[in-house]
Image (cartoon, rainbow, N blue to C red; front, side, top):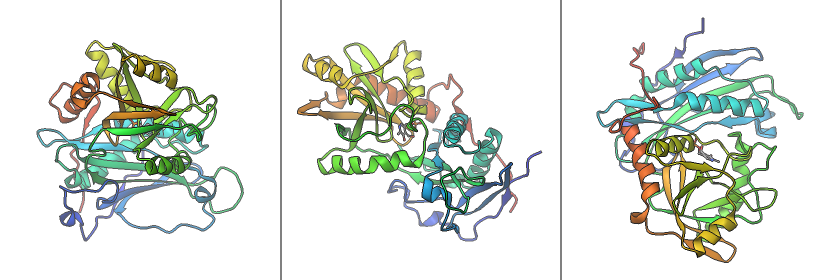
Length: 359
Ligand SMILES: Cc1ncc(COP(=O)(O)O)c(C=O)c1O
């Protein structure tokens, strides 16, 4: 039998100091966090403690060699106020796929779900209700080995914390197709949700922002020819009457929202083609008038319309949002399932367990 989660509740909740109508993304944190340690054999000492700093050794292996993985997921309140998680087991599986690639131990799915439900039972008042807002949940794992030398750590820590967030983008995004830097190459770690991928994206993202773009549209590392994904989103295009999204080729993160949108559109009778999409195909479609829509999908933004894509000298300005049939449908379907106003045909929505928390 598993060790129960030890619980230490905060004595000073920050809840009343938060302006839930004006939440900056990623800067407000709920009262508690979950922590467990891997001792080389098994995960031990699961506990929920007040959110706060912890000590770290100067030779911490994760800081030096990057053994660090994470997930991003959300809890939301449905239209009747019921708190729910969205596809938590998929996040557990992806965390473990990242762990395998980064030579780290897997974290048992039942422990992951217990941790989430217990944490949310304690911090459920932190789940915001305003339109487009949610409780963002950040599970992550990192090496805690305390020595220098490029090798896999034998000990690790798993932490889960959360924080309320508002809408990620408040208008359609402008993308720059990146021609110099790459995010990930096949055979690398692009499919893993590991910190280094995001570190590698920072400089190109900064340069793109200086030119007036919101995000980089990544092209493949071999030929700079095929579209991969965007910042923290997968990407979909509507070309003529076809919906297409790049096939995951080992260098693209397997987005859970991407999977959900493909299924939701399929339920409505739309087929989404998963295949290599070249940037030249988009340029050609733009010139012949068949490039109708582009939208990104991801946990942070749900579905974000793309306003324009710049590739070399071509600025592809896409039709106004009012004309976006598919992207809007994708957004509405996902929102309906999340809020409980549309049927949850695939059982993605998991009500937060009603737990009695000992005080
Ligand atoms: C690089 C990258 N691509 C795509 C996504 C979208 O994935 P998901 O829909 O699982 O959030 C994310 C966000 O997690 C991401 O960081």
